[in-house]
Length: 88
Image (cartoon, rainbow, N blue to C red; front, side, top):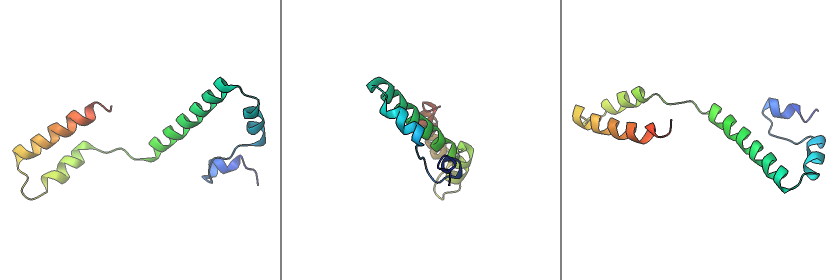
C-alpha cells in the first residue's frame, strides 16, 4: 500500500521516505520552518473540519429558554457579539 495515499484517505499523516531523508539533512531553522508549516496545515485542516456557528441560531435557542425576556436576551447577545467580534 502506498503510504502517501494514507494522507488523502484519512488514515493519518505519514512521512514518505523522501520526506524523512530531507528532514534529516535540515538545519535548525529549516526544521523549525518545516514544523511550523506542518502545524499550520494541520491547524487549517482542523478549522475546516469544524462547522461554523450561526449567531442567529444561538439567539433563537436562548430566546426559547423559559425566563429569558427580551432585555435579558439583548444583554446576552451584546455580550456574545462583543466577545466573538474580536475573533473574526
